[in-house]
Length: 114
Image (cartoon, rainbow, N blue to C red):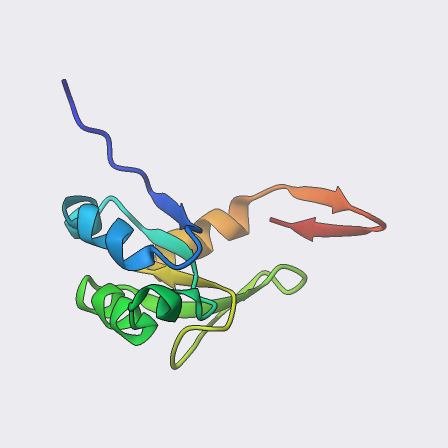
């Protein structure tokens, strides 16, 4: 069976991010994976995990943290992770191209690119 690597991972496991990343090392190493959205909100401390080490591990695999502004369709590199969802990108150009070619959708009263 052929293994398929996703281009995006969303990780929201309420403090167990370290364990998920430890189990996903072959996926993290695959360059087909372009982006990760991960929630680092301090819950890892409750289980003895250091979220700074999660950040460092993602950096080691070639990812960098970014903010995304849907109204401006703009990615801005961050120094570190945020207090909630942070987007980590390995291939910013790939993601920018996807943003540029994405269709507009209506959310509430405004048009936004998601």
